[in-house]
Length: 65
Image 1 (tube, rainbow, N blue to C red):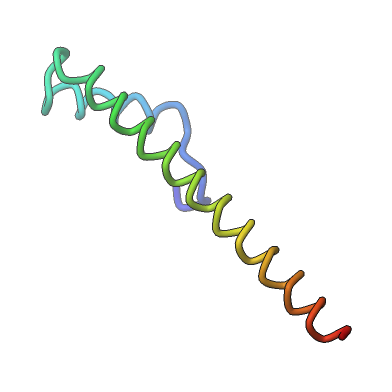
Image 2 (cartoon, one colour):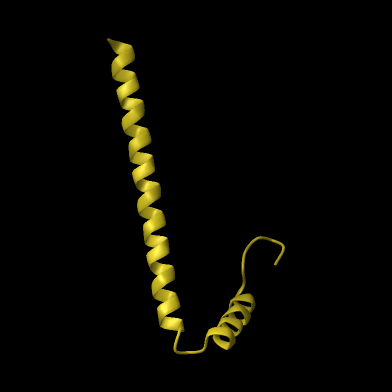
């Protein structure tokens, strides 16, 4: 596990621990929340990239004048 990637055995252990802590009724809610968090993170990262690209283009236009 020190190599950096998580194997199948580690994922199973994590899933069992989560199942014991939260119970089977909460798992769909946790998954939904995690999915929303990842989606929001990706949207934020892409909008940040777009604003940086727009800012660089504006700087190029101003330096060419």
